Length: 155
Image (cartoon, rainbow, N blue to C red; front, side, top):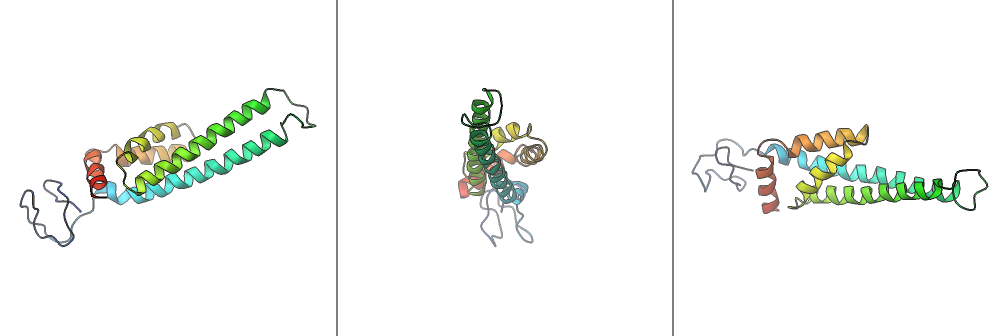
């Protein structure tokens, strides 16, 4: 909860801001970033689970159907190509999971990592695009950096 005038963090049921002296009327307001941060962290973790499942499936397919001992006639480059893609997807899943954790725990490194991952996720249609746009909308809005830094400092 923050002062509507200066943005200073407030203690629950505080009647006046300690920094600027502004009288707090009614109940304290929750910042826009704080409202969306929990959902954003959960969505990044769900995105990570989806990528983990897809990466595991691709890894299994590359080692069974397109493996070196397979009876299926396939080009020789498919096995290493699919294995590389699977490991890339699994790495992306791990970083997405760390991103979700950083946002949920309000870590200082969570916002920059989420912004980088949002730009990468934009290319993954349709879920990554939606998640990337939502992440950019929440974390790139005016004053979002200040609000997030205040949340990270109080965590």
